[in-house]
Length: 195
Image (tube, rainbow, N blue to C red; front, side, top):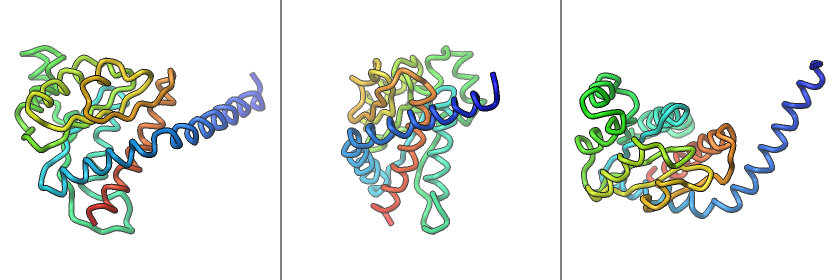
């Protein structure tokens, strides 16, 4: 493959991604605003957001918690917001996996850290990650608000979530690209609501 052919691959991917993003934004903007409003309501009332996901979604979980605790940009200096990525404590995760099974790595943390009035943000490109599904089920039993950043058809999580933003694509890469786009937008909207 020549360098020109490789460059064309990049350009085609960017064109596809930009067209998909615009179409998706037109379809999902109202849902994203509703999600931001719900999260702002929880944080504004003194609650916290618990966030979890696997693989790339685990990185997105940590990324969003960082943006909420620190800030999105230096243009808005503000108080920190209560956010916990359930992906970051390796001792808790490995102990839960060892003692209760991998499916319990997030639900044990939800049970320990969640309180009624908090929110769980479940991130899953398939919507079928069993440990994220179990965390959402635990959160629902505890009267936490359950919000999903999902992909494809939304999977099992779609029916568990109080509010969901589903990226309707089959490619994990495209779904993850859109998830991080919406994470940044959610944080921006939350900051503008609360500060």
